[in-house]
Length: 313
Image (cartoon, helix red, strand yellow):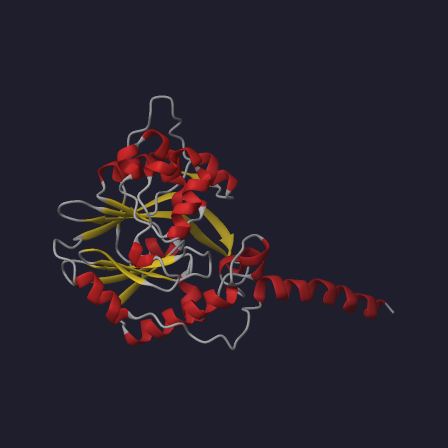
């Protein structure tokens, strides 16, 4: 009798655990094609100086069980971060994502916030020629939402698809008239669009409706594809597994089947194009890895307002 009760309790625990944290979703999902030749043609077809280097800012950081962001990834903790990427370009930089405020970071569950790094991001946003996003989630657009009510010039630099701009307007209704219209080239959910010399984007809805990847070819020929929230961690692509169902569907509103299709497409693309560096959306351990990482320079600390507490929490 005791053995039966123990087995029943194990099943009660094991089945939900497997379904929520281990199951990767339907194995029959087909890979979604990412047309790298088209991205290259769009990026190369723009006249002007291409980006010369890339910097990153880790505005907020945390340590999460691996199985949260990679289904079946185990309970060992992985370092995660909220990243902003600066494409350093003669004639005007492009900034990808905008960080977030401390309140937004704490509400999103990040344990450490770095105001001195967000201060640098603020300088990047003010000096940039254009501002883009890989997603409309708060940890991508939060920084611009905080800036918009005070800075019309920064608002005019925003380049986004319709879903992204709608999300920003919903978060900051008073700034509706400040934002430029959505980029026509990215109006369709599966469209490709030229952004600037060396930069192009492809819509990849799944994690959210406005999720997209951004392709970058530097002046020296190095190529990067910013995968955003489609592949938050390196192991998403290596193992071809999306976020766990607990994170993707219980805490979020992700279409896991669509996301898995894009992840499989990224894995195929990486096999075909070993010289292309995939940039994962939240993998802080990978970003800092001196061997396997992308070798981007970290952002220096920026000046804090006199009233701000410069202590990292």
